[in-house]
Image 1 (tube, one colour):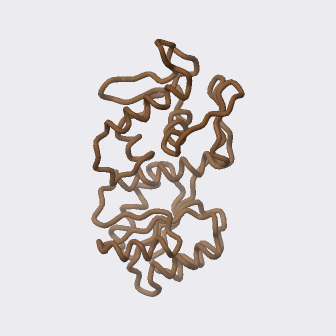
Image 2 (tube, one colour):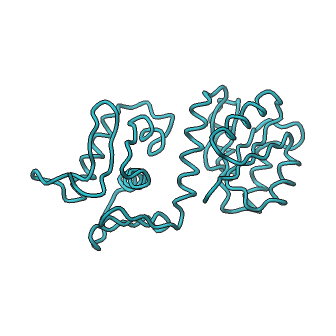
Length: 229
């Protein structure tokens, strides 16, 4: 995927314009609809929309109903709902309607952009195998191999490896890992990340002093090397 296409559905002109500019500054192609009816029309006209940021409160159709219709017509579409409602029931209704994720207003712009990056990264990886040295990963099938031998990975171990492989040779910060592999609502100890890194190293056969493919940058994050160091 060269440029992710985002459909922003937000009736507040100030919020909508600010989000559109911020998303475009990140390199995304953005279409902005101020009503649910317009959103459905744009989605029907442009079937290659990758991700929808959908406000729940719209002046015509309820955002949940828009979500249902989008999901019915575009089963593979990624939908993130934006809601000012903090009631857990409202969140559950949105997810049941087909939303993949949600953000509760007011949210920090950095949080929304991080969530968008996480979803776009998954879209970019979907169906596309990655090779880093003798490591191979198939995101669509959620399978990974080392030297031709399939690895048995737990879900978070797979997601962690997929992120590190997508940025091989570059540092991935602890904050980004926690946001994209876990989520922005994670309030637990980041020690869980260290535990998963240690487990992933064992899966890769890096025990008993053997060279590691994953370099630790203390206080910053981790980097996957193309060759063990």
